[in-house]
Length: 125
Image (cartoon, rainbow, N blue to C red; front, side, top):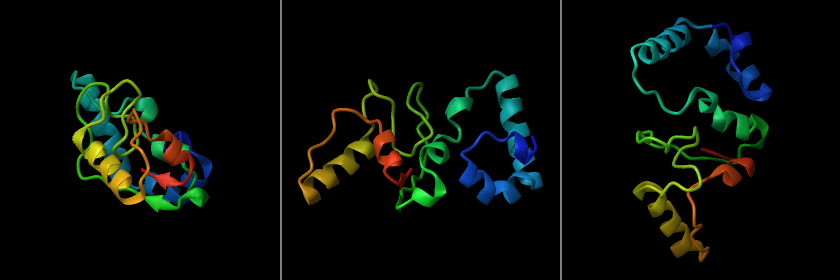
């Protein structure tokens, strides 16, 4: 896959284009394709692989959230760190984030785990 084929928000595409043409990137693409061919489950779904980049353009990034391990249960991964789709119970890591925000800032916990609105406001997950 050449850089021109990567479906990603334009500002990120420009910034990351040099990476897309490096051998490791093609190796990653080939590996993921082979895993899928071998019947293995890959998260997030292909359409959400660059969800964080597509939701938070580079020039709008204000905060970066890094996670150690991606979610690996069906229906959880949505391409945003710590985020799960509405209707999916927030995992312990996200509940801990919500608790810290509630305790520190007196902001009530949301009743869902979808962090899309955060991403739209500049939180790059």
